[in-house]
Image (tube, rainbow, N blue to C red):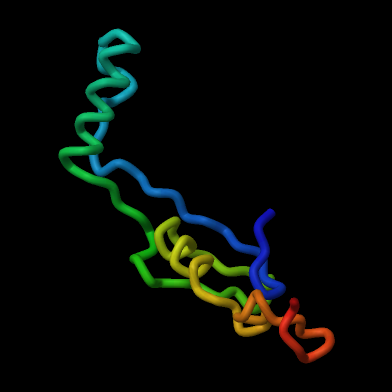
Length: 95
């Protein structure tokens, strides 16, 4: 389970806007190829918009889509030092 600042993180995965129905009588290879093409052509959708994060305070959980999670992880954390060359335990630069 992924955690962020004491909260569990739940990722809402993208869903293809269109794909072949399970009842469509095609070979597995064709289904894979056609579904990949439709995903590229029609795109995907998600319950959560890019940049949107739902905070469930009762369960200490965050809900977001994969792109938002990638942006959150890429941001520098305020609770960790920014300067990697500095020895923060002794307040001086490492030599």
